[in-house]
Every structure is written in C-alpha cells, then in structure tokens.
Length: 426
Image: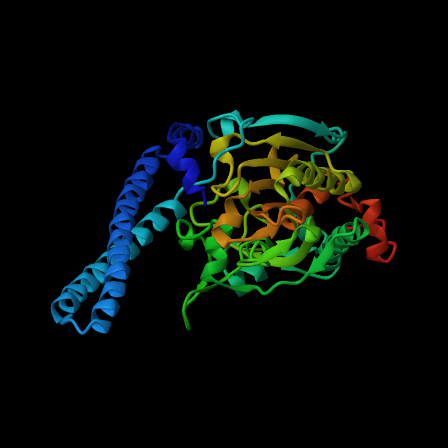
C-alpha cells in the first residue's frame, strides 16, 4: 500500500509512477477525493465532540447549582445523533478510500524504465549456449519420457491438463534439486521455514495479490475465503503481520520449501507443453525483512544467491532487469534469472528476485522500533525464488543431453543422487 501522505503531498510524482507501469493515473484523484471528504468529516465530528465535552461540563456545574438542564440535555442527544451519523459516514468513506489504496500498485524504483517486457534489459549472461554436434537435440518432453523421468499422460489422467507425474529417477532428480537449494541456503545462515499451504484472505491482501488477483488462486469455499498458496512468499510475508519488531531482530533471512498452486488461466502456446507452465510445481523461496537503509544490500544479496545456484548447476542463463510494466503490482524493482531452453530457442524465467520496499509492510502493518530513538517505522520486504524446479528440469535435460539420449547430471546434484553421474535411456 502506498503512503497516503505521499499521495497527498506529491500527487504528480505518484501519477508518473503509475504511468510508468501503464496503470491509470486517475487512481490518485480517486484517493485524494476520498481523503478530502474524510478529512472534512473528521473536522466536523471533532468540532461536535469538542462542543459536547464542553457542554457536558457545563451541565454538571448547572446541576450543582440546581438549574434545570433538560433542554440542554435534549440538545446534546440531538448532537450525539449527529456525531453517530458523522462517524458512520467516516467509516464508509475510509472503507472506500482503503479499497482505492489497496487497488494501487507499488511505485517503481527510480532506476526502473517505463513500459512492458519489450523494455526489459539483459544485464548479465553466464556460460555459453550449448551446441550439439552430430545430432539433432531433443525437447525436454521427449527426453523426460525416454529417460522415464516424467509420466505426462498419467499426470494428466490424475490431475488434468497442466499436471505431470515425477517417476523413479525423475522424482529423485527433483528432490536432489530441492536438497541442493536447501543445503546452500542453510550454509548461508538462512532460517528454514515450512509454512501452511492453506492461507487466509488477509495473507493475500498483505502480499498485494488481493483484491485484484483473487481469481488467480485456487480457492476453498467450505468456510470463508481460504486459498492454496501460489508461492511461499504469500505465506512468509505475513509472518510478522501486525507486529512491531525490535531493531536488533533485523534483518531476517528466511527460506521455505512449498509446492506452488496456480490457476494459470488462459491459453498455452504449443511450445509451453510439458513442465514450462503448470498448475502445481515445487519451489524454494527466499525472503527478507530489513530496515529501509539495508534494503538495497539485501536485494543485491538475493540476486547474487539466485544466480550462484544456477551457476552451480552449470546452466547457461541471463539476468534481466524488468521494466516497470513487467514488475508485479507489489514490487518496486525485479530482476529475472532466465534459463536457455534450446528446443524453444528462448530464455525462460526460473527465478524472480524483487524488492517491495515498504509497500507490503504498510498493507500488513509490519514495523520495527529504532533502538536509539524508539521511533516506529515500516520494514522493507524482499523475496526471490531460490529456485523453481519446473524450469530447471527442462533446462538440465536439454542443455546437458548427449547424442545417445543420455543426460549428464550436474556435479552438485550427484551427492543427492547416490553418486549417479549420467541418466541413461530406458
């Protein structure tokens, strides 16, 4: 959520930020209009409450003097009705203003360029694109099938389109990836979390996904609004919702393993078959809570960690800085780590690392108290995939395939595969 003070004092700056994203700048006018009405009503109700307090003291004095106060008391009852009516109007306006604020996206960071994905900037590439001499490389669907790693047909039979089934060595390879990520994060001193997979509506609001993106999640309707988490970020960002941390508590460096559940509404391209887009996939997520002045350093740290995980696997990738319109609504800045998929002749994102600044903290009222001044401020929240496996498995089998149909297993995964070095066709 944006600071109402920022919107009130620098409306043109906020409008420019919204325009950078391709969002409607008139959102600012709606919020300001509600704010003006709310402040006017507050002035009126405070004036009436002050008058009531003054007259109440007078009534007490008059009673001591034996005077008749019935007429004054009658006027005070009428004044009380006015105050109740104004309080009700204020509550209604505040609800509308809050809804308008919740619908506004975050301000893009100053260094983020306007526009959509066409304006994304590739800032780094690592490794060489694989070359295949003497044979035609296969796509990951054919490779995973011939190696017995994935059973796509039975996955669809059980879950429908957009689901798959890891089998045998494929399941072991998937788990090896997760073990590799977990061991690396533990090595760096991050705290391992296993959050609930079912979340309340408030979790979606704090993360910035609700109310606008309610239809993007799998919702359970038996009792209230509970939904399957689309990413561990949605759970972890709520860890300290409504709390005030001490300055000594920060920074918090966390990571979590969860399956992720996404509706992925819309049509799939033919090239996105297999594991490229699905309704359920595994992911290890990194998350940070920091003081504002430490936010940039943690952002750099998370980007570096995500890149090192991919480099450890030996996969060719590029790092892209997203334009404002391609960042999610809650994020001020985002970098994507994108893997090269030879069969598609393009890069596919396997990690997004983002800084929400204080946007999510305002929505969830997450603050910390300065040790020296005792001042209470909003924390900054950051997140990054570390990593999503559904893009890694295709990249591994495609980039490391050999002419005989076998796949070289990345060295860092071999300890989790019982020393296995190569996957052989069945």
